[in-house]
Length: 193
Image 1 (cartoon, rainbow, N blue to C red):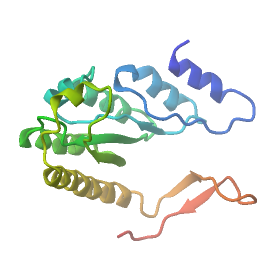
Image 2 (image 1 turned 180 degrees about the vertical axis):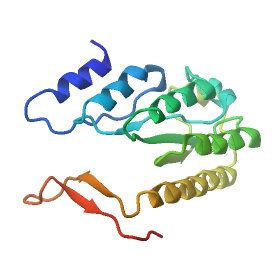
Image 3 (image 1 turned 90 degrees about the vertical axis):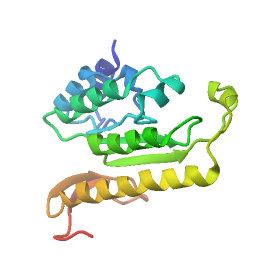
Image 4 (image 1 turned 30 degrees about the vertical axis):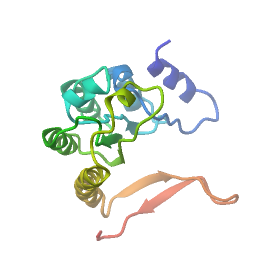
C-alpha cells in the first residue's frame, strides 16, 4: 500500500471528518498524493514539504536526495491540483559553506514556491550529523542577517497571499476548549493589513 492509498483508506473510516499529515519528505512526495488530496475532501488541502535550502549545492552538502529543480517540480505538481493546496516548508540558513549566491538561490526559491508559511532557522551543529565535521563556519551575526532576509521576504509573500483571501468565505476547522464547535464558517474582513 502506498502512502497516498493509506491516506485515502484512513479518510474512508466512518467518523473521520478530516485527515492531516505533516512533513512529507520531498523524495517520497509524488503525483499520487496530490491526486488523493484532490479527490478526497476529508484530506486537508495542505502539504508541508521541507526544502531546507534553495541551493542545489547546499542541498548536496546537506546530503539531501533532491535538487532545487526536482523540488520545484514537486511544487508544480501541488500547484496544478484542482483544489488550492496550501504549502509550507522549512528553511535553514547559515549551513557550513553557504555563500551569498546560495542565500540568493534560497530567496529566489521563496519567490518560485510562493509558500503560505515557512519555518526558518539558523543552522546549528547537531550530534551524529555529517555537518558536524564541517565546522560551523558562518558567524552568528551573519546567520542572523540571512535569517532576517528569508523571514522578511517570506512575510511579504504571506501578506500578498493572505490578501488574496480577503472577503472570501472559507470553511475553517479548529480545535479549542470543550464545548466550542469543531468547525464553522468564517468570513474574512473586507480589508487586510
